Length: 299
Image 1 (spheres, rainbow, N blue to C red):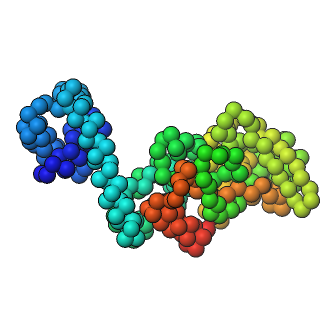
Image 2: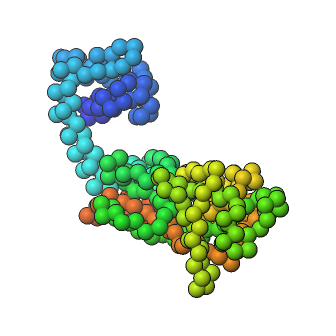
């Protein structure tokens, strides 16, 4: 194994704090990783790593070596990436954050098709219904479903509107009555989406009419799938993106409530760190995702 490859293995061990973890990351066998480090230490004439049953730590010489070679390895990786980009080839790791409900329903097909078209890319997807700090946590982009955000530290790009609908189980409505007006919601259990300590306020409109209802009840959560399941369990009325409950609505397991009233528009949006120019791999993934949502899987 060459010098540069040995450095890559060494830095992977430092990052993972484990020979086995480095082997998994690099797609090598643990025995190969062990042999590579032994050969590197033999060439340098110093011990770089101390390996115990629980962890791997750097020797003082290893710490000096890591500090010197890490920028070198990073620079070489960037040079290779820039060379491929100059040839118009999307490649490299793309770290993506996305909400759980969207990730489970839409992104598997996106990732499979994208990987077929761009085999030199690797997408690392993290699913979370919280707004992550994409700069602090080093994401290339975040996919979010939300209203407008006042965030000056990120760049954002609207992809598609996301229709929402009030829903309840037919058995719940039979037992508790069907609201004919937003004012009737006061007599119902409302299942609240809460990402912070504030109650959700349903802002409903019908032509020129505007009504607000504070959704308070026995349950609140920051996950749309949980709200949908609670509605299916006849626990109350929920306001949800239609794509989460479209199957349940089509089969009659859920019923639309107040169908003439609509909630404010929310959007499927991409957020980026403050790039001067989007890296080719990020721009390529973003364009592919937008085309997929618009043409193949509208929300």
